[in-house]
Length: 373
Ligand SMILES: [Zn+2]
Image 1 (cartoon, protein in one colour):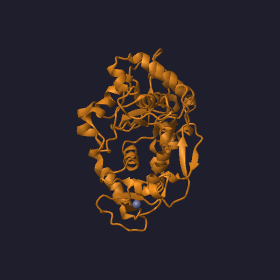
Image 2: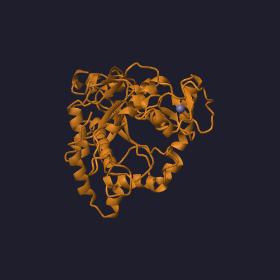
Image 3: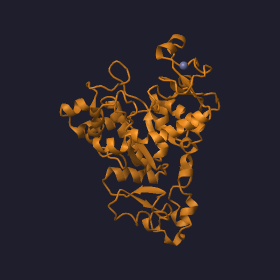
């Protein structure tokens, strides 16, 4: 192993170590004498990411080509993607398997979404992660075909590619909609029901607001013992466990935090019978092998709720996911941007003939100022 000592050690892999093959196992597949100099074995290949041996970065030596342990970039001078990969290797940035871009087709995407996608792309490159495109369409009342199409139009406009996921709206409907994975979510819901971890709740939002101005759930239905199959009732998770949650952060300043009051007894199955966002998101991240999540700071509470849910379900692999939360951009009045067809939508830029390269350059400039944690 001595001739490969420049390669990132096992330390950066802490957050998701269980999903990766141990370094020792990779090293054991050949002797140190097999290790070529840095990049020698990859520099002639025109592939951006290839499965390679962590020890010598040589594809031939990879001990398990069906399930590659790491995916590394190939360095080409002058190419940003490879340049960023090279930088990450040389600075020993932690490496991750896969991240995701996960828009919701409930409105036209806006500048804030675009910024988040670009940041995800940049960080994926910096950390050697593949990108999954996952379109979250469980909000059945608000999903519209034009919003699904808008996701693809926006990503094309931004010049963002992805390694896995639907290639277009038709492919999405046929193969990638969350409706195709209902059994995955229902299995988790059944587990929670069988373990007595959920209760039925038929409170309306107005009911809750009357007794709880901050909209945190006051526990109204906890003791009512409504049957879980009560028509129009949601399922809430009993959040009695006060053990703090650990959020693994990219900067390694991991945070221990309790579930926020706003997430007390959060909903895991909606009144319409479909899984709630927290449940479908965790189940999907686990299903697709996501070990790196980039999202807005407004989803910090969701991160904690999802970690809570994963712990309750015994999904320890999700609990080791590494997160980045980024600041949000606001509109002129200081409010968080919302999905609409207005001036901040990407659709508006597309329709008014905005120049993609100039727009991307502007967004990248803003990215540099975006606070991350
Ligand atoms: Zn209730």
